[in-house]
Amino acid sequence: METGKVSNFWAIDNYILRLGAIIHGLRQEGWEIDGAFGEGKNKKNFIYSLKKSPRPPKKEYWVRDRLTGELKRVA
Image (cartoon, rainbow, N blue to C red):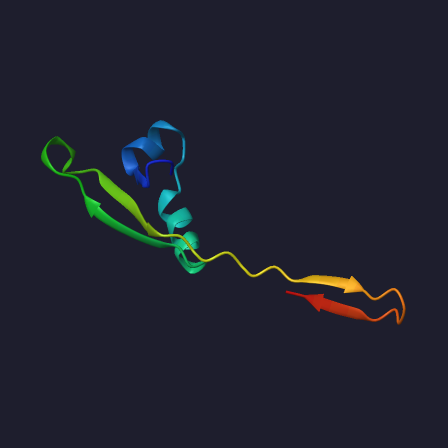
């Protein structure tokens, strides 16, 4: 989704036949995707638009203390 949009016609042209299932999975992962039918000649084409991507998970780093051997979390 380089442009933030993908349509059913584009997906079929590129042999992506389960676009609805892919969009459903992305929504369950936290992606906010909106959809609407096209206008004019594209009335039959459903276009999905990316509204918001999920926040990346916080990374935690752990370091072993050389003296005590204990693991400490680094923010």
